[in-house]
Length: 171
Image (cartoon, rainbow, N blue to C red):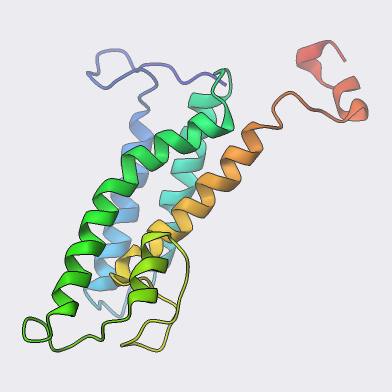
Protein backbone atom coordinates (compact mmCIF):
# COMPACT_ATOMS: atom_id res chain seq x y z
CA UNK A 1 0.00 0.00 0.00
CA UNK A 2 1.25 3.43 -0.83
CA UNK A 3 -0.37 6.53 0.65
CA UNK A 4 -0.70 9.23 -1.99
CA UNK A 5 -1.04 12.99 -1.72
CA UNK A 6 -4.48 14.51 -2.13
CA UNK A 7 -4.45 16.98 -5.06
CA UNK A 8 -4.65 20.62 -4.01
CA UNK A 9 -3.81 19.96 -0.35
CA UNK A 10 -0.72 21.34 1.34
CA UNK A 11 -0.36 18.29 3.60
CA UNK A 12 2.71 16.12 3.22
CA UNK A 13 3.01 13.03 1.08
CA UNK A 14 0.45 10.43 1.99
CA UNK A 15 -2.07 12.91 3.37
CA UNK A 16 -5.56 11.44 3.58
CA UNK A 17 -8.30 13.95 4.49
CA UNK A 18 -10.58 11.25 5.88
CA UNK A 19 -8.00 10.59 8.60
CA UNK A 20 -8.53 14.15 9.87
CA UNK A 21 -12.26 13.47 10.10
CA UNK A 22 -11.64 10.33 12.14
CA UNK A 23 -9.22 12.24 14.36
CA UNK A 24 -11.84 14.95 14.96
CA UNK A 25 -14.44 12.35 15.96
CA UNK A 26 -11.94 10.63 18.27
CA UNK A 27 -10.92 13.93 19.90
CA UNK A 28 -14.55 14.87 20.41
CA UNK A 29 -15.30 11.49 22.02
CA UNK A 30 -12.35 11.87 24.41
CA UNK A 31 -13.24 15.48 25.29
CA UNK A 32 -16.88 14.64 25.95
CA UNK A 33 -15.84 11.69 28.10
CA UNK A 34 -13.46 13.84 30.17
CA UNK A 35 -16.07 16.58 30.30
CA UNK A 36 -18.24 14.04 32.12
CA UNK A 37 -20.98 14.20 29.52
CA UNK A 38 -22.95 11.17 30.66
CA UNK A 39 -24.81 10.80 27.37
CA UNK A 40 -21.49 9.98 25.66
CA UNK A 41 -19.51 6.98 26.82
CA UNK A 42 -17.05 6.82 23.93
CA UNK A 43 -13.90 8.27 25.54
CA UNK A 44 -12.10 4.93 25.46
CA UNK A 45 -13.38 4.33 21.95
CA UNK A 46 -11.82 7.66 20.93
CA UNK A 47 -8.42 6.47 22.19
CA UNK A 48 -8.88 3.17 20.37
CA UNK A 49 -9.65 5.03 17.14
CA UNK A 50 -6.36 6.92 17.56
CA UNK A 51 -4.53 3.59 17.87
CA UNK A 52 -6.22 2.26 14.72
CA UNK A 53 -5.29 5.45 12.84
CA UNK A 54 -1.71 5.17 14.09
CA UNK A 55 -1.47 1.55 13.02
CA UNK A 56 -2.90 2.33 9.60
CA UNK A 57 -0.50 5.23 9.03
CA UNK A 58 2.53 3.30 10.31
CA UNK A 59 1.68 0.36 8.09
CA UNK A 60 1.13 2.59 5.07
CA UNK A 61 4.36 4.50 5.54
CA UNK A 62 6.60 1.52 6.34
CA UNK A 63 5.27 -1.22 4.09
CA UNK A 64 7.62 -0.51 1.20
CA UNK A 65 10.27 1.11 3.38
CA UNK A 66 13.60 -0.50 4.20
CA UNK A 67 13.27 0.67 7.84
CA UNK A 68 14.45 -1.89 10.37
CA UNK A 69 12.61 -2.66 13.60
CA UNK A 70 15.46 -1.10 15.60
CA UNK A 71 15.44 2.11 13.57
CA UNK A 72 11.66 2.32 13.84
CA UNK A 73 11.86 2.08 17.66
CA UNK A 74 14.72 4.59 17.84
CA UNK A 75 12.65 7.10 15.87
CA UNK A 76 9.71 6.66 18.25
CA UNK A 77 11.92 6.90 21.33
CA UNK A 78 13.62 10.03 19.99
CA UNK A 79 10.23 11.65 19.36
CA UNK A 80 8.46 10.67 22.60
CA UNK A 81 10.87 9.97 25.44
CA UNK A 82 12.61 13.35 25.98
CA UNK A 83 9.38 15.28 26.58
CA UNK A 84 7.90 12.38 28.56
CA UNK A 85 10.95 12.27 30.84
CA UNK A 86 10.93 16.05 31.26
CA UNK A 87 7.28 16.01 32.39
CA UNK A 88 7.78 13.03 34.74
CA UNK A 89 10.94 14.59 36.19
CA UNK A 90 9.18 17.88 36.81
CA UNK A 91 6.27 16.13 38.50
CA UNK A 92 8.55 13.93 40.64
CA UNK A 93 10.53 17.00 41.72
CA UNK A 94 7.30 18.67 42.79
CA UNK A 95 6.35 15.59 44.80
CA UNK A 96 9.80 15.44 46.38
CA UNK A 97 9.15 18.91 47.83
CA UNK A 98 6.11 18.22 50.04
CA UNK A 99 5.42 21.87 50.71
CA UNK A 100 4.85 22.41 46.96
CA UNK A 101 2.40 19.60 46.41
CA UNK A 102 0.44 17.98 49.21
CA UNK A 103 -1.90 15.74 47.20
CA UNK A 104 0.49 13.05 46.04
CA UNK A 105 2.95 10.60 47.50
CA UNK A 106 6.56 10.43 46.45
CA UNK A 107 7.77 6.97 45.48
CA UNK A 108 10.99 6.72 43.47
CA UNK A 109 10.02 3.29 42.05
CA UNK A 110 6.83 4.76 40.63
CA UNK A 111 8.76 7.58 38.97
CA UNK A 112 11.22 5.12 37.43
CA UNK A 113 8.57 2.72 36.15
CA UNK A 114 6.57 5.65 34.76
CA UNK A 115 9.68 6.81 32.89
CA UNK A 116 10.06 3.34 31.40
CA UNK A 117 6.38 3.11 30.31
CA UNK A 118 5.73 0.22 32.71
CA UNK A 119 2.51 -0.21 34.70
CA UNK A 120 2.98 0.19 38.44
CA UNK A 121 0.63 0.74 41.38
CA UNK A 122 0.00 4.47 41.70
CA UNK A 123 0.67 5.70 45.25
CA UNK A 124 -2.37 8.01 45.36
CA UNK A 125 -5.04 6.14 43.39
CA UNK A 126 -6.09 2.50 43.31
CA UNK A 127 -4.80 1.64 39.84
CA UNK A 128 -1.69 0.71 37.89
CA UNK A 129 -1.18 4.16 36.41
CA UNK A 130 1.93 6.15 35.53
CA UNK A 131 2.98 9.11 37.66
CA UNK A 132 1.13 11.50 35.35
CA UNK A 133 -2.07 9.49 34.90
CA UNK A 134 -2.91 10.50 31.30
CA UNK A 135 0.42 8.87 30.42
CA UNK A 136 -1.36 5.50 30.38
CA UNK A 137 -1.92 6.14 26.68
CA UNK A 138 1.86 6.41 26.22
CA UNK A 139 2.34 3.11 28.05
CA UNK A 140 0.00 1.43 25.59
CA UNK A 141 1.48 3.41 22.71
CA UNK A 142 5.03 2.28 23.42
CA UNK A 143 3.86 -1.33 23.72
CA UNK A 144 2.00 -0.89 20.42
CA UNK A 145 5.16 0.50 18.78
CA UNK A 146 7.18 -2.44 20.09
CA UNK A 147 4.70 -4.97 18.71
CA UNK A 148 4.62 -3.08 15.39
CA UNK A 149 8.44 -3.00 15.24
CA UNK A 150 8.56 -6.75 15.81
CA UNK A 151 6.04 -7.13 12.99
CA UNK A 152 8.33 -5.13 10.70
CA UNK A 153 10.86 -7.90 11.13
CA UNK A 154 8.43 -10.38 9.56
CA UNK A 155 7.84 -8.48 6.29
CA UNK A 156 9.98 -10.86 4.29
CA UNK A 157 8.37 -14.02 5.64
CA UNK A 158 5.26 -15.68 4.30
CA UNK A 159 3.51 -19.00 4.61
CA UNK A 160 4.07 -20.98 1.37
CA UNK A 161 0.38 -21.94 1.08
CA UNK A 162 -0.66 -18.30 1.37
CA UNK A 163 2.05 -17.12 -1.00
CA UNK A 164 0.86 -19.65 -3.61
CA UNK A 165 -2.57 -17.95 -3.67
CA UNK A 166 -1.36 -14.34 -3.62
CA UNK A 167 -2.74 -12.61 -6.76
CA UNK A 168 -0.03 -9.91 -6.52
CA UNK A 169 2.63 -12.61 -6.89
CA UNK A 170 0.88 -14.44 -9.70
CA UNK A 171 -0.55 -17.19 -7.49
